[in-house]
Image 1: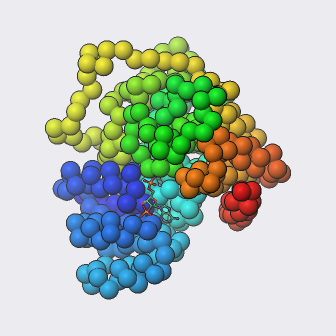
Image 2: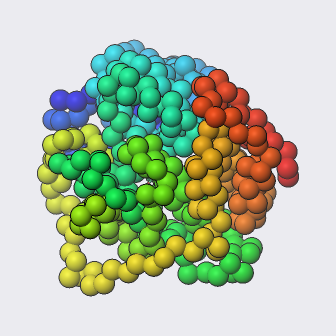
Image 3: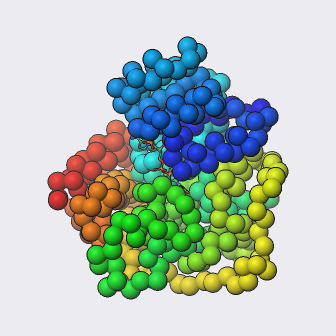
Length: 381
Ligand code: NDP
Ligand code: MG
């Protein structure tokens, strides 16, 4: 039996993590969870999973919830609440499925507490990969990828040596706008951006997929998870999302991991690694039914965000903190209909251009830059 603490339980990854727990009650138990503002969702989860600790985003909701939950359930809020969930004494593994760099500090605390981390929350690695990886290395804490591309690479690496990698090939579905020209991206709506062809995900990552920033964030995530330089990370458009990523080795051999697009597979693998668990009755991959797989070069001109992410990654230091914070702020503005879709990349580029990079920033500097960048971007409208 593995005890799981889950940050971001009400999100797309969070609810699919609960599916995995629900499908294997004899293997997993939910000991602690956090939500943001979806208190109704939290109520149902508390009833079904009976965790000992629950954290919500704001105090007002915590007070409300405290009056309703069974006496054994502790209700907390804010960053301290997230930390308590992340570090829960009974937890064997933390699933970090919260959205955004708000996941950074609790992750570092969980590493300090010696918890194994299953990480979906890519913004944490983009904003402060050097700190997270160093802390995990020092503590000997495993960081298990949940993102499908990184799980694919991690699975293809089993039994292999990282030194034999020639390059990583991260696949990209292309997102909602993969068949549009640059001109056709002018004036696209939020609704259109949220209509992803292959995956059902949270709003922010769906917009990131449409702008190709998601792939940019994933390139940076891969750089940290697999300790590999940017010139050895390629991105390839693959519209079916069947090959989740590949490794090319020095001997020219290529290892790929395939599967139907279902996030419960990489979530479950992170929870069972190095073992695997039966997924009874679930759809198996049928390549004959799919027939053809397609691959295309990435278009760096049509989607500027991917190039911006590579550049920020190569510059390193605080530049990726700015990239992430500007993107989080700009995507939120787009989702509120306050800026256009192409306005997202304009804002990120401006934030990067105006930033003077600090190499090897410490946690405090990162938190300051993150806050300042969000504030600056929100003042531009
Ligand atoms: P969602 O938007 O669906 O869910 C985000 C979760 O985080 C919700 O539980 C939300 O709470 C909570 N949350 C948001 N902001 C805060 C905050 N300030 N404080 C506390 N909790 C907060 O996101 P996804 O599940 O799509 O994505 C989560 C992470 O996983 C992201 O980093 C994403 O990039 C990554 N990821 C997602 C994939 C997917 O398929 N969805 C695939 C690969 C990676 P509430 O809703 O209650 O307000
Ligand atoms: Mg992904």
